[in-house]
Image 1 (cartoon, rainbow, N blue to C red):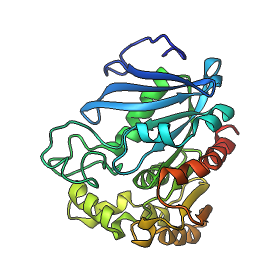
Image 2 (image 1 turned 60 degrees about the horizontal axis):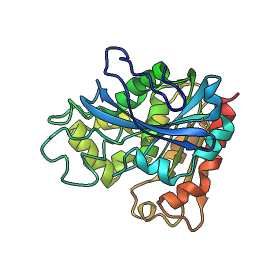
Image 3 (image 1 turned 90 degrees about the horizontal axis):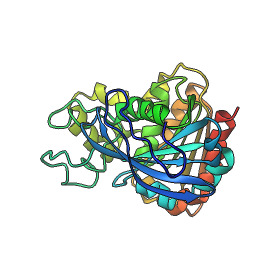
Length: 298
């Protein structure tokens, strides 16, 4: 197990290379850290951020996974969202991975901001040249939790997931595809129905190919229509002045309709005057951590 504060023990986990600590800063009586490791799923070096609340010094804590949006790294959430205060108070570890593999030297990976680097879309790609590295779905749902549970004082039975935009899509599909794995799910301005919007169509055709039935495996609205797991309490905040809401990239109404048909409880809050930015996330992050704490600390 890695030491909570300053000192670091490095060791191999499940045959993978050891974690390397990149940074550590005391914050809200806990520690905000960043680590790097060699990912077996993504076949490249990956960084993730982890906030360890003060409670983690003496006992195991539940874990909230945060998935960021297009163009982000592990840094955006930890420097802009202000999640550490509420995570400290509720005794929750918060893990924020990067949004895609990096430096894989795949032709075209740096060509556009909404596909390739910084835009993994939390799917397992099936198409060349992406399928070897672009396996963010398995990284987030399998490899990363294994790594966290092996190296930190995390309670492996208590996980929740949240995210923003592309990451809100990621959080929703991870929860809907794995009934019972996550205690709760929330999202800020998620891409709710990617098969029906330009961002999703571009990403899915590139990563998953022309067969649209494979796209449905990663679409929250479609997954909600066939969900049959334990009750999942979903919280979604959406800015009313979000330019991507008005340009039909997010399509929350489609997800709400699917959830109401399946009687999946959704609290959807349309927030007057807010846009798509981290100013919006900062304004409501405490509500989301409280939402997860209700289930994680039950």
